[in-house]
Length: 487
Ligand SMILES: [Zn+2]
Image 1 (cartoon, helix red, strand yellow):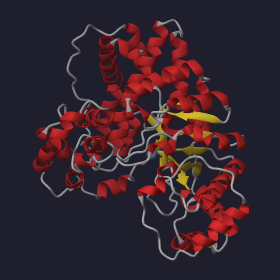
Image 2 (tube, helix red, strand yellow):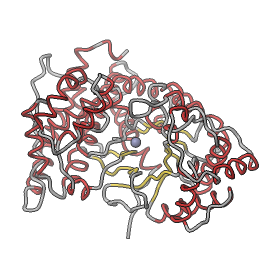
Image 3 (tube, helix red, strand yellow):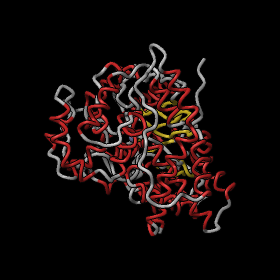
Image 4 (cartoon, protein in one colour):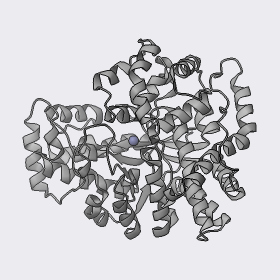
């Protein structure tokens, strides 16, 4: 429906960008001035010049809403941001940014997987890598992933064209980045108040930079252990010898406490990457039987394609997932859970439909379940669950780059169907802050378009539109994932 007016659509997209530049000009300039002090980061360029829109000027209404939406300090429900010190310690070039999500579109367009590995090799000349990338970039450059990438390059590094010369210039600037560039990009440019960080690669729970992040942590490992070595490792990190189903539960509870001690505000699960979200009731006896069989496996089992549907320890997994939800409910911790298509190029998407979670949502009625990624592309599942259950919210993290148009339609449908307090409007879901910035621009532009459309139809007035924007971009997430204040 909102795609029926492409001219207006294009006009509004560009407006939002020029609106930001004009609005945040002063902030951005003083930010750069401060950053250009010795030891700071000089490399982030001022917002790049955009080609002038060919259509007539945007409406005053659209400019006003765009400017107001840009002023909202986002509470960002989901990121995988690499720590700034780690980012600065490693080689840096724009092909790293290609490696997060955009690479999946390139592979889907036919890029050989071997070439994907070669693109990531920071030692190879940029010219050589661009030659490999270009034919596939040309095919993908209009997707949401590509738009996050090109927006980041344009606005943060002043590179208007993704080509050899542009990538070389971006690489040169990235090499000059200094401490402070995360604050510059996340706080001053993306105007994100703080983000929920899922740093799943950190084995040990680590307190993040409290100015920028609060913590989400996963316990899927305890729900679906692979073999005996996993149980041994759980013993090492928790001090609980995992020799029974009861001990496995105690070890998981200990791990949850360890993570609470460093400021975890929510439990996260990506178990839909491994198996179906349908968790059947499984008795203690059946789960204990599975545990004994698993304990007898001395070697980790290699991953097979069939694992997506064939789970040899299913009763144990089902039972442990229910236990995880019971603990989360008792502790008052929300659950952020992956629903909808997985990242990557070979996963089993039917496992991920949000409606598979219905029995769990019904049973743990005091547990807040935050359904990630609007269940893309099965957004109707998520909408129905949030419409029925007081303990369910829908989360647009990742969604604005999966498909800006699909996310826009979903937001419009959800605003027609749901209390707006149940919608979490933005989560960047990137390892690289530049891409979180690009994603935030796409999100603000498209949220603006939906709200303007509703005002023009007479469904909302301007103040009501801004009340909704403030709630879905900040207040709803801040209530669920409050910022942890450290001593
Ligand atoms: Zn994620």
